[in-house]
Picture 1 (cartoon, rainbow, N blue to C red):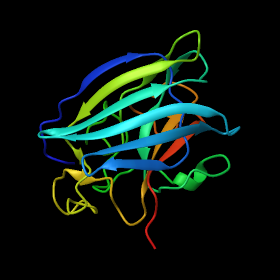
Picture 2: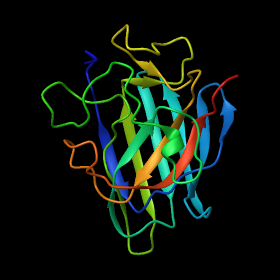
Picture 3: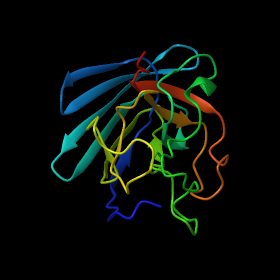
Length: 184
């Protein structure tokens, strides 16, 4: 498991839906268009590199009301039912879930919450992820782990809340956005 002080500042309100392609705004920020499985716009998620970690800001819509699992996935592909994005980003090979003995995946994030209008807004700060392409990609070091990897990465919204233990607790994938597309 990554041996980092894992600070998590989480404020959520609304919904998250994702797919599409990341639009790099500068070296320190990526804005990702998110879409639903039906191809509807689900808002944006912005990744902003700060001095001491990565700020993930979700501004999502068109989601079912309630809690939703929210994760970074291991491939930058959002096609069909979004299985193309692979599993959770886990370069250290850790277990899934904040409430497991051996820690959690680098791609595990707190649940987000959609209001009655299907809107989710959240700011999540993580110290174990970075936009630095020269950072750890395979878990050899203890992070931070880069989202800028050859296989790319995706942000995923699931149908239900993650129970922070079981890998499949969050249910199907309902929205996806490509953070970094695979490189050729």
